[in-house]
Image 1: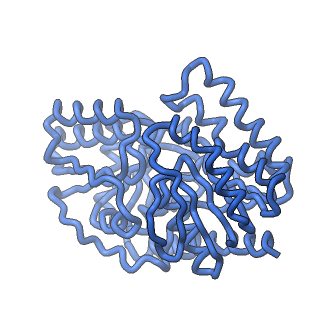
Image 2: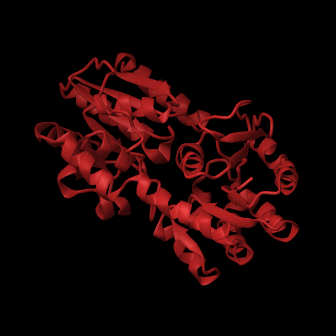
Length: 369
């Protein structure tokens, strides 16, 4: 086997791990397998799976870490590519116990975001926010490469290892059969969001924006594409929707495949990214590029990535928490013509996953020499 991808925190068909990395590597001729919870019994698109069973809680995830180490050691893989900070001890163990190369895929700046996780006890926030970066830094010396989703996340690793590759979560473009909108809308203005339905990603701000627009006479609806995170966020959202009689104006399609997601996006009018600015400091939300590729203008809070990547003519930046400003930005976006083909071309030429995949493939070729 060329490479074994390991995760206890992500879905087995996670977009970055499966749709982008694993499938691109298989297409390039590598033999790839994913170890995760709740996996398919059959290969998908040439990718094999090994299941860790069902994880109904974080405790289930953490107790399966020993199983990950055992499965990985027995796999005799050329590369062990792991995706979660909780698997750092496994990565270190594999660097000693096997002849395979070990790759750490850093999806987020964990030291930065840990204090913002609702499930982290207040007494543990400081220790984890300091301890995870220290563990990453010390352990990275044992790894053959670190893959980071942004330069911001990858920067600290340059001090401890020579092989740090930034591989952005840009959208797949050439593999998309079409982004024609085929989802029926029920309002004159359709707002759309893709991502985890959680407060820091703006679910409550989006609902308040919808309330404001409807109260101001705008025939609007909201499509929120993704899975709920904390139950408290879901309960608060449902209560808000009922209180303001928005039941007929909000749609939650749930988790969608990559192709299905683009059908919904391409049918909408405006993409929303009302993100928590502190939480997304240094982050590059993939949704920006997915919105652009679907031909949508983007209404966003002033996160760093908005200024770095979004073309000026397609972004509308509003202060965090300012519903009135967000509503005015939606109106301006609707009043302006946005050419879908032009926006798609920008993504294809500058921000496509296909370009990022070439970097990952080159890294694998070097590690397997």
